[in-house]
Image: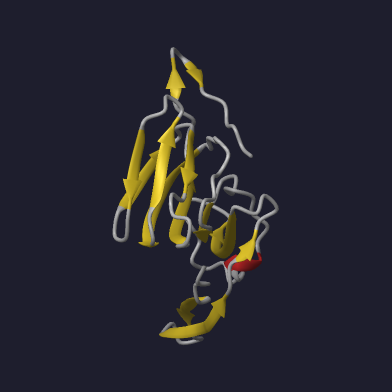
Length: 163
């Protein structure tokens, strides 16, 4: 298995005259999660939606679970070869952008789609899991998660199911 390089994050902001500036340029490795099937690197969060561009907090330093209540999260996920996530659902709209490798998205009824580099998934509060079908290649995905109202079925919100 080839390890993927750290992720480069460039952050912009403003100087005291209101002109655009580069605030930081850093590289972050992904870190294995307790289940061992993936490695995560939190890139940024916002405490609110809409975001507040006057908040000077480094968004990487804000506490975030899988999602962030009332906010947004962007993280890089390296799905390790053969890795499978648990079935889960969050009250968020998630944009998944496959950067390298392949990943299979499976829904709770067993329907599956294989996704590769350049493919984008818009996950709208459904129960799903992720599976890396390769035995040798890590799949890297950028996930942007923004809090959303839960899906209403027969007048009741479907509950979150977090791993």
